[in-house]
Image 1: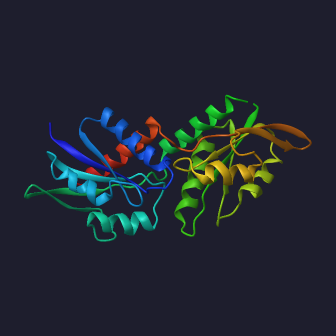
Image 2: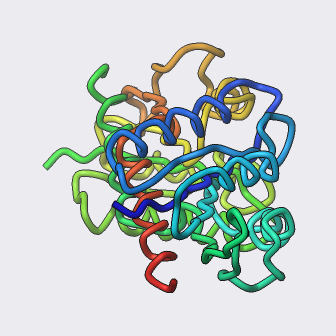
Image 3: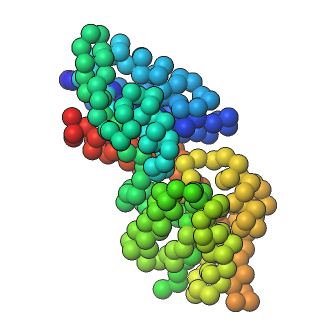
Length: 133
Length: 133
């Protein structure tokens, strides 16, 4: 089966919660979606950095790489900082990635954003809290 | 039907994206879940503030109020700042809310956190981006 790389990008934090969220979500995705080789990379503070994690993909047998920012919404990190780290000119969502001498497509996904699944998650957390009333 | 109040709390931002995310998610929840009277409140910058929005609930016919932070993960905002705004001592998740002379339960829900729905959302965004390869 041809696999795809997924780089799940986190903001990074001096507290442990952002790193735990990104790493645990990456494990869930890898367990449920065998089409993806999943790695994490952090913009700030935590390791591996985005560039370190990108470099690790050059050893993988993948035919495309998708960079998925685990951020709530657009903003300067999504529009400027992460594109800079992954070698995409600002405003573009498609580029290439060098893999053992060949090039594969690199695409940049949207952050969480406005989505029915997010609404569902918030309602789920609300119901959990209300169960203790 | 007895209704419940849901205060969806956002971080707030000088850019429009956080406010759009919170307000659009609140609309989705209200449309899909008629048991909730949904309002938004922002910790910083945007209006209404958490306290302004809480005050608005005192006019509603609800029998419980749940405060749901639309944040990625725990951290100082979740553990200190928002509890301070909603009158909960740090570390507690349950309190009361004064409503036209009576008191109703107030509960504090978790942020997004580690959840299969979040993994599903990230995979969905990855597939959308890969559709352009």
